[in-house]
Amino acid sequence: MTARDIEIPPLGLAGTLSVPRDACGLVVFVHGSGSSRFSPRNTHVAKALNARGIATLLFDLLTPAEEADRANVFDIPLLAGRLLDVIQWLSTEPSTKALPLGLFGASTGAAAALVAAAEQPDQIRAIVSRGGRPDLAGLALNRVRSPTILIVGGADDGVIDLNQAALSRLPAPKALEIVPRATHLFPEPGALEAVIELAAAWFERYFRMRDDQRAR
Image (tube, rainbow, N blue to C red):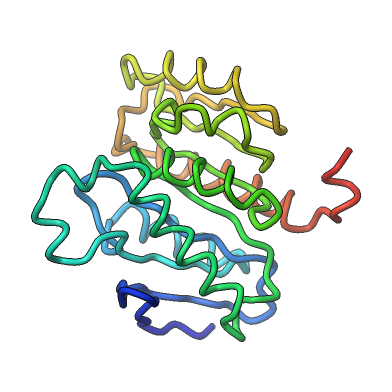
């Protein structure tokens, strides 16, 4: 596997790109409010996906100066715009341009992932939301064509209802999985491992599916 630090144009956003040999696809992580590419949970998930032959990109959605303004971490259109810049760069990068693309969003990052997917319906093969706020994607939910799984902790009070409401608006293939007794960050023993299994299975399924099969 090759792993390298990168700077993504046009702003030079910092990221870490890891590409296993014979990767079946690439997952871009879209972290939630107050987190970064060094999120221990997303890093753990990324390493598990790498071990299963899935490439990953962890990157910072904001510059250091922008992070100083807390309002930016909740600005879904801004975050989605940054993600679209990353998707564009990946489509020209030699090591990634041929790989099917998926998005893994956490917290507010899930909303940004869904908004970006609505703007690039032919680019995104699959979306995974972990403890996400898909409801914050607003009207974009109705335009998401990428297969989407929403993973929520069974003890994440209030968030389950928000995810159920968002699920009803998604027109694409979709699923809602509730991890028993898990809270918002999935710190309970075995909770994050359950997320990994659900996410990996979802990505593997749609990365390997032909375009004509996805259209059915």
